[in-house]
Each structure stands twice: as C-alpha cells, then as structure tokens.
Length: 87
Length: 87
DNA sequence: TCCTTATGTTTATTATAATACACAAATATA
DNA sequence: TATATTTGTGTATTATAATAAACATAAGGA
Image (cartoon, rainbow over all chains, first blue to last red; front, top):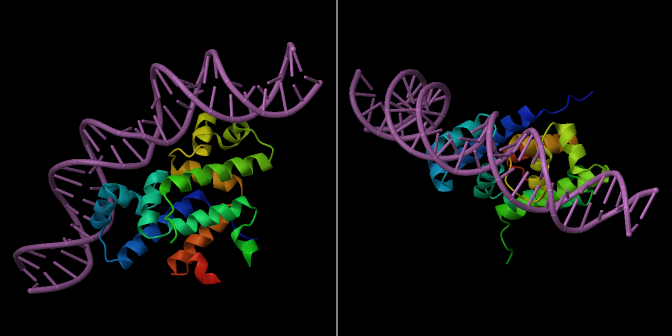
C-alpha cells in the first residue's frame, strides 16, 4: 500500500529543489530574486513550500534549465505516455 | 539549433493537457470545477494558458493522478538525475 | 570578538488570481 | 431546425500572491 502524495508534499519538494539548485549555483535567495526580477520574499516563501503562481515557478524552472524537460514531459503525457510508460 | 521553450508555451501546453485529460474523462469545465471546488472561470483561464496558482495546477494534476509522477520527477531532479539522464 | 552575509519573519501596500454573476457564441443532440 | 449543453467573454468583488522595507537571528569569516 503506497501512501498518496499530497499537494503540500509536492510544494515542499518544489521548494527543496529550488533551494538545492540555487545553492549548487552558489546563489543567495537575494541573488536568485534579482536574477528573476522577483522579490526575495517570493523566493523565501516558495522555498518553504508556500503557494505561488505558475509564472513564479516557471521563471525559477527556466533559470535552472528545466523548462525544456518539463515541456517534453507534458507533451508525453498528452500522448498518454506517462513517464513510467517510457521504460 | 533548438529553440528555447518559453514560459508562455509551457502554460499553453499545461492548459492543453488539462483539456485533453478532462475530455478523456468526459467532463465539462463545469464538472471539473465542481469536482475540485474551483470556479469554472479558473479552469477556463488555465486551459487557455493564463497564469494560475500552484494550488490550482496541483489540484488538477492530482485529479488526473499525476501527482505521484510529478513528485518522483522532482525527487529525481534533486539527485541531479534529470529525466533524460535516466535513459 | 567583531563584522558581514544569508535567512527567517513582520507589517503595510499593490497587483492579480479566484470567485460569482450574467450573457453571447459555438457545439452538440433530439 | 429547435433545444440543450458547453465554451468563451465581460464586469465587479474578494482573496491572496507579490512587493517593499525593516529588523532579528543566526552562521561564517576576518
């Protein structure tokens, strides 16, 4: 029996990923905020799993070069090929 | 030379995926809105590529059973294993 | 220890996503 | 054709994400 993943868990994981990617580029929250023309508070809240807008999430994803992969994954899903079915 | 995917394109693709999944379940925008306790206008705007909140996107993803895959993909990315590197 | 930097948190304000209507225009369905 | 259903759009209001500024608290380096 596998526990269902919750929306809250996904948001926390998104924040964790942002933090980890940001640190891997040796950037502070302030650095990332300035690079994306967002406020540090927006980054701060996102990294701690709070709600955000799609634009904010995608700006961050784009900065870490994840937009192409995301787009392709969405295309695959549309053709009823979920990620797992590719193996 | 590959054109970079834009944030706008990702939002449009997200909307398309929502529409396609919704129709595959024979649901109207109204049906989906009621199931998720969102307004039809929110679904309408999302399907047409407008900005939305993370909560809205994840509610929709959850309804179409995509949350687990998304969570795992995020976990993989955190370990520097992007989707492509799995092949 | 002092000084700098990064992060967490608050308050107030602004911008905008979400809601709740209504109504028109398509798109089926009988 | 009619009729019903779905979708697109408009307007006003509400809820909340984003901003801006300040301040506290680490945590790290000189």
